[in-house]
Length: 137
Image (cartoon, rainbow, N blue to C red; front, side, top):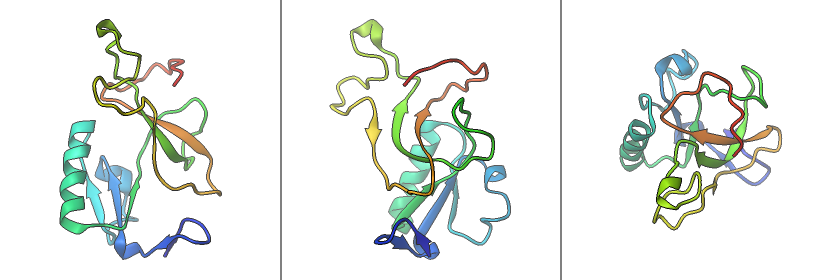
């Protein structure tokens, strides 16, 4: 069982573990309900949508590597806030990170809190930052 808190838990069999790359999963997830999406937001959205339709998991756990100035390599972080860090259409009069005409906020809040894990904001993007810039979300 995967225990989220005192009231919420899910069986491992009803959980989908999602990774961009098989190398991120390692051998630990070989006998689990595992999905490898490939790199990029479009690949992730397409593959995850197909798998949700096919398997109807009760819990989705997205795992993988990410860079951070706040956390260290190997840290496990609970993300319940998400932003498209490469969404920049200010030239068309919209705010930084705003998805035009979507009616959704720039910061999406979703998911379950794990009280034993630190929280972070997941900045998703299809440009891969390597220079440790000071991007503020």
